[in-house]
Amino acid sequence: MPNIFITDQCDRGCKFCFAKVGPWSESYPRRALTFAELQEILEVKSSQPKQVMGVVGGEPLSYPQLIEAVNLMREKRIFAKIFTSGSCALADGLEKLKEQGPFNFIVNIDSIDSYTPERRKNLERFLRTFGPMVSLSCTIVDPERDLSFLLDYIRDYGLMRYIRMGVALPIAGLAENEYIRRERYRDAGLRFLELAKKAAADNVSIGCDCGFVACMFEISEIGWLMHKGMKMQFVCGPAMDIGPELEVWHCFPLSRMPRVSLRKYKSLEEARQALQSMADQLREKYGPGIFTRCRECRYRKRGQCSGGCLGLIVPEQALSEVKPKIGSSVSQGDPSCPISC
Image 1 (cartoon, rainbow, N blue to C red):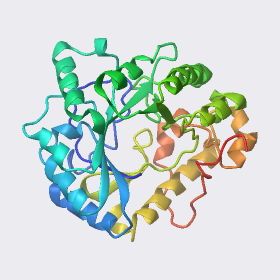
Image 2 (image 1 turned 90 degrees about the vertical axis):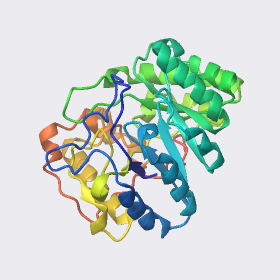
Image 3 (image 1 turned 60 degrees about the vertical axis):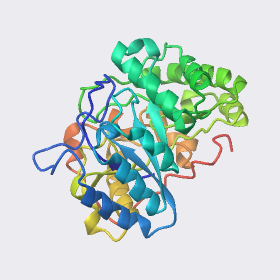
Image 4 (image 1 turned 120 degrees about the vertical axis):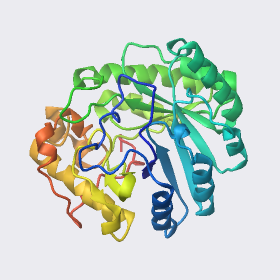
C-alpha cells in the first residue's frame, strides 16, 4: 500500500519515531505536500483499479486541506487510511469527515496514562467521534510491557476489531530513536502472542506490520495464531512513501536511501521496482536478514520471511552507495502463504 506523505508537522514526540529524521536533506523540497501535488499523485493512482492509499505524516490531522484531500481521494475511487495519533486538537469541521466516507483512521495509540490531560481529552473526543471508523495501531517498544490496554480501548469506544502491531525499528545507520534489539525479538514475539490470546477471546484480530520475523515464534504458535484469524506475515518490501515534488522513498527506516521521482516512471509499479532493487543490493552485500541464521533459513528461501528490517544491519554510508534499477526486482514471496507450509 503506497502512502502519501502529507506533512511532517507533529508535536507528539514519540521516542521510537522513525519518521523524525526522514529523507530530509538540503535537496529535499519541502516539509508538506501542496494540494496540486496531491492531485498529481492521485491522477497517477486513479489510472489503476480501485485501491487503498495511506495518508501519513507527521500528523495528517494538522494538514489544513485534509477534508478536501479525502474528498478528492473518494472521487478518484481511492480508499484512504489516515494514520494519526488522534491526540492532537481537532481542526474545526473535522467531524464532517464522518460524512465523507469511505475511509478510516489508523490510530497509533498508547495507554491512557501516558498522555497529558489535554492530549487525553483530545484522544477521548476523537475516539468518541470516529469510533466505528477507527482501528488501532501499536508499536512494541518494550517487550516486557502488557498490551491488554488496547482491548480496553476497543470495548470502551466501539472501535474496529482489529489491531495493527509493529516492532520499533531503527533509522538505518543512526541511533536517534528507540527500537528493539534483535536479541529481544523472541520476547517481543511472546508479548504479541500473549495479546493475541486475549484478543481471540474478544473476537479481535491482530496483524503484523513491519519488522516481524518468523523465528520470533515457534511454528506451532504461528499455526495457532493463523487458526485464530491473526494476520501473520514476515515479508518486507517498499512501503513507498510519496512526498513533495512526487519524490518517493522506500520506507522511513530506509528513507536516507536515494529517493526516486514518480514523475520519471510510467507507473507506481516501476517506482516500486526501482526502490526494491536498491533494497536487494543492500541485502546482497550486508546479509539477507538480521540474524546469521537467516542466510540458510528455509522460510527466507521460500519467500515467506524477509529476515527483518535492513535498518538493523545496514550502515548509513551504504545507503548512498546503491542506485535504482528497473526490471531487477527480486520477489519477496507471497505474504498470504502460511509459514508452516
